[in-house]
Image (tube, rainbow, N blue to C red; front, side, top):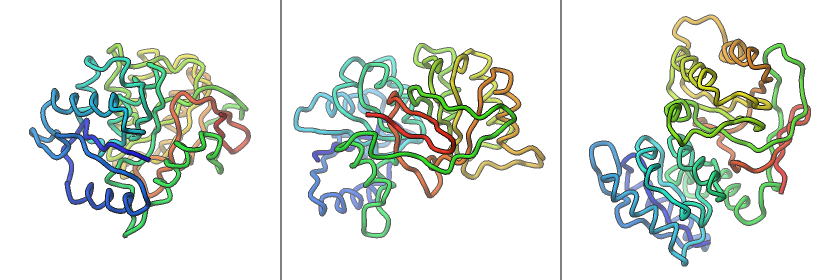
Length: 285
């Protein structure tokens, strides 16, 4: 595949990105970079207008098959007022802060894959299995992958539901509340993950999504990895905290999905229809 790497958010470490590119190129893929990928403005990968220019150029370049975000971090939502239909022209891959752009690409009818960022795709001198899964998604579609081993949480009855898979990083989603770029999750299966947030901030983000109505009508919530999220003396588990809020909306929860900021970050496509059956979540083509 012909892949363009761009950095729409935080500044990147050039050596990690170029090392990943070398491994993919050795497998036969063609890797190019946005013109400003390795710039820095404060903690961002260059000024907003330059990051936007790289993203728009990649999405409209007919020699590019897919756009892989270099990393998440912060800054992606700065670009939202300036994106247009071109964001749906080809698949984009990323997660964390990137999910603000992933959601907008999905709303515009594009292919948005929640998966490892480019700086994370190499283990040693080989492509990670999760990166291979992304390439499988791009070539074979969502039916090639599914999540198994989910466990029901809370005290609501276990359900089998079908709907589009939505969501992403909890803190990023809550930061979109009150803007035009947070979509309703009604009728969807909401997948959530986060990193480095203490329990009280996770609960605050969850409460913000609940109170702004973003979760109204959701069919289920599926929790991925909440990595390095300290309890700080809280005796309740995250599952119990989520259940306390989601029970108010009659939304069942499932835990243990293999995605997020931990060692396991399997990809999935936003907006693609999926079904929860017993302990598995499977996508349709």
